[in-house]
Structures are given as C-alpha cells and as structure tokens.
Length: 273
Image (tube, rainbow, N blue to C red):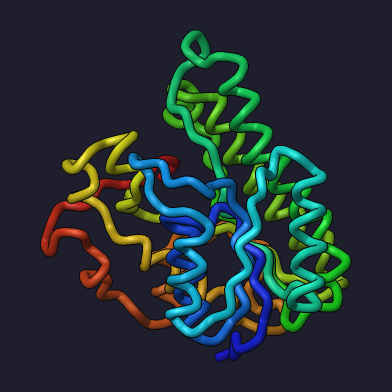
C-alpha cells in the first residue's frame, strides 16, 4: 500500500459527510488535508464547518488546512490552490466531492437551481482540476477522484430529474476524459459512487429522513473505497467509474455488513444503479 504520510489531498466539500469521512481516513495515515468548502457557520440541518472538520482531521493524525471556498468562483479556487502551495508546497490528490442536488423534473427546476448544480458539479469540478493540474503533474503518485456515477443512459435516470442527472454524468465524463488526457503525465483519474444510499446529513434531513438513513450505509464505506483506489500506483486504476462494492471485491472483501447503519437492514440502492 502507498503511504499517505505528508501527501497533500485537496478535497472539495470536506466539511461534512462523505468528503469529511475520506479526509479522516487519509488523515489517519498522516496526510495533509486541504478542506475546500463554504461552511464557516454551522447549518443546524447539515452540521459541520471547515474548522470543526479541521479539528477532527488533526485529532485523527493529519495536518489540516481549512480554506473557505465556493468553487462557483474561479478566483476562490485559485486562492485555495495558492494557500495550499504556501502551506504544503504541492498537491498530490484532488477529490471532487462537492455537489449540489435537486431531484426535480423539468417544470419544477428553477433556473437558479439548474445553474447551481451545473456551476458546482460541472464547472466547479472542472476548474478545480484545471488549477491543480500543474501541481498534480509534479505530485507523488497523483490521482484525481470524482464522486460521480457510472453513465447509464436510460429513461429511468433521465426523466425524473434531468438537470441533476446531466450534472453528475458530466462529472463522470470528465473523470474518464482526464484519465486519458493526463495518462502521459502519470495522473490517474477515476470516479466513485455508492451501491447504496449513504447516511449523511443531506440524506437524513433533506432527502429521505431517518427511514432512508436506516436503510443506508455509513460514509466510511466510501472513505475506505477511496483509500484503496488512491493507494494504487503506476496507473493501475485509471479510467474507471467504480461502484464501492466493486472496489472491495477487487481487494477480496465481500462482507460489508460493518458499514450498515442498522445491522441486517434491507439496503436502499442509490441513484443511477
């Protein structure tokens, strides 16, 4: 396994949920974690700020750099990259985790919500990679990991919430494109998506409540899957849109019961699967 000690991980949306779980997993290995997120005041429905995440990351054994950043704004991304270089000297891994979601049809999706999803999910992820790219090229076993699903062009996923679906599929297309575009630079690029819903504040408070949360897995399953992907060297894993269960199967791990929120519960399949 690759050591993450002193490697610098630039994670968008790492103040809570899946992003924070990945950050904490890599922090236990001694990584430098750059927390690129908006939250400096706690939203009672969602919880967590860049500062509370930083404390947890440092308690876990990593170094933390919280930078208030809204990736809709290019100058804020550039500022985050510059602060990362000033503090840690480089960037080894970029994790595109930040996303906006609204599961509404065409008539119900306001222009501002359409724009929000595409500004964060698509444009923001693109610009993050663009501005980190010169430093990834110099990085130690560089990787880009994007939290987005396999591209499944069927009406089941297109018709109910086309605006959100387009934004997430665009993220996956970028992940696949970057794998080929940056192959010559030795930069791996993959996407990762859960087989089941994940118990985050967004699921619990905004999407499905306690009922859905209890049919979900914990964010740690994606943190561990990300760890396995990012540990691979020499482009062993690149150009994949992984489901978390596939990653574990490749490691010979089939018993995932420890990640269930409620032991023995029937799990709810995530979107796009």
